[in-house]
Image (cartoon, rainbow over all chains, first blue to last red; front, side):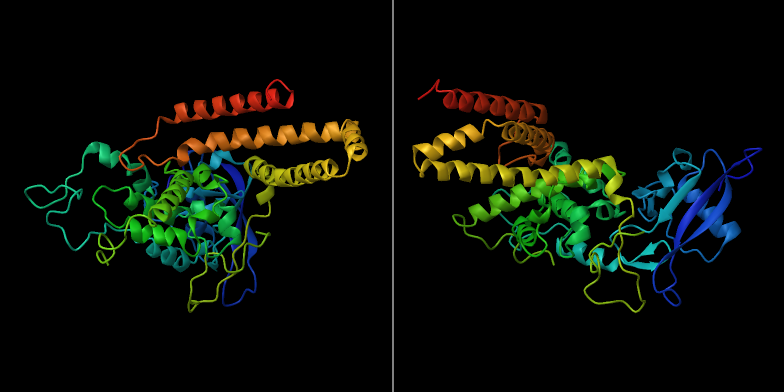
Length: 267
Length: 146
């Protein structure tokens, strides 16, 4: 925490959502007027309140360098990673709320289990078929037994592998707000990332998930997920590429027999 | 927080041990310029619905004899209808430009062994096709072709 650098730190009022599941029926707000320093991020201000003003506030954070994805909150109504959001970009009165579209556990902490369930449905791991030897078109193996991947093959999915699961995209998505079954941007982006991986053979399985309950076709291409993504993943591109892949997969399923590759491996 | 999300948005399939507050959206969710643009995009559906009804009226007029047809054509020249068609044109251009802006990134990096052209090329092709088809239909409707 950076403190005591400014001789006369400016004051700002943070309006923070409070919710105690033991005593509150619905969330309420509480205001804190605090001295802020010019180089503070929003997370610094929340941490200051937690450390110096009111220790009962609950919020998540960890790395403070936009890698862990823990500190996502609504800042003046927009999903932000608070550790990389400058407090100086906001006025004298800043509203801090828990991520939209998520059940609230306490104060600024949201329930993650629903996201984890969606996450697992897209099988975010490399799926291999049982029969490896002599499989035509399969990935190449090095002498050490590891799968070889060229820089060009890596480049096809690398962007989508940069997701840090901060869930800002879920808080921004108008479809997530209205359709509880929708897989959502981050989960689809990760599933699509493995579908594009040259080592993977699980496209059939994932495309069935993409076409099933909460399918990729629920996306209305509002593009809000990509607008708020702090890592430039562009989940909207992944979701709409996944639509394309799911349609091609559905169409070719009538002429190309399925089964074998990926259908038994991986889990 | 003010506007409710779906009460089961992002809820786990089985409730946890701790009671949770229902998911919410920010009170100002509708006021962000990006969201307003998106809502405007959605609202153009109403314009298309009305355009469809006008088209149905014209089809009905075709089958109702020359007098009804002439009356319908005359009414379409009224300032109200002309203004409505200008609105329809604006809606089509707005949706087209928005769709074309997003469409190139929805192309997968490869379709089987084939790679789609670079995004700027896709965008250019879309606009060329749009302008070309518009000119073609305009020529047909003006009697220049057929």
